[in-house]
Image (cartoon, rainbow, N blue to C red; front, side, top):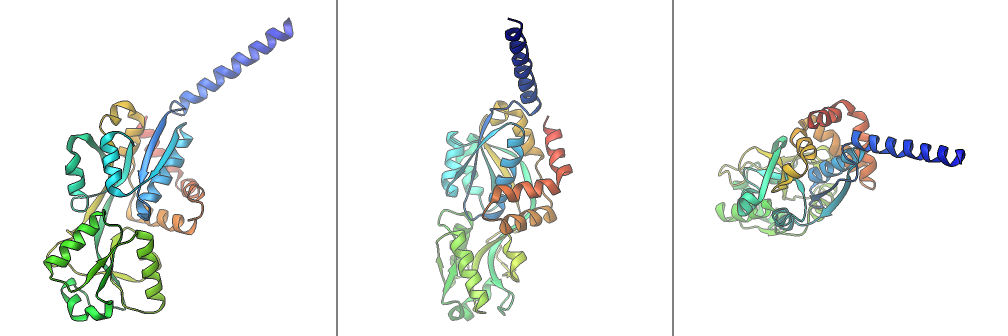
Length: 288
């Protein structure tokens, strides 16, 4: 009987300790669904980083990969909770406006961003206005990404505004990078739809073509958006996302680690967290 009572006492202590531990880690067993667009390096990196961070806080994190139009529609429907890669004020302006009060911004995570047409530095033109004069050097093609992307719509507009004799070829971000890498290896001329921050600017010598008509806008920033009501449903996570912010140097380092560890993004995220403990802890402390 004494052994039975002793066993029950130990069991009660263990359960109490477990509950105490869960409370310290932000109510373990909470679930959150994050979305990202495949091939959008900065969004993939920030999403996997956040997955690792929130899992240490007791969350069960589900990742959903989808085209950007489906991401925004799913946010509006409440099927996903958070998307960390909304580019404003130009790239995703129409997509955010389309769903209006069904979305809510959780704040800016990257201050400086840019979209436009990108070429290797050995290409001797410097402006979109010069493309027609050397269109044959590019096989009259602009290598783009998926059709639903904001930069794709802006490139269609650029073709119209500049009366370009080039056609946008759409596929995916990964396919675009494959074509870019192949062309640079052979020192061939290529023009792609590009954005920064992105690891390709660290790996290759690239430049944006000047855009005097400002079709692609000027400096952009990257925001985190959530479904309506997320702030009330999960104040801790909402505060975490509001505090999440990366400098140019920090996002560049994260992107480099993610690209180097592309086969294991979770491990790459954990390695970055290990080297940036104070920063990560500041995001979490402000969230509590």
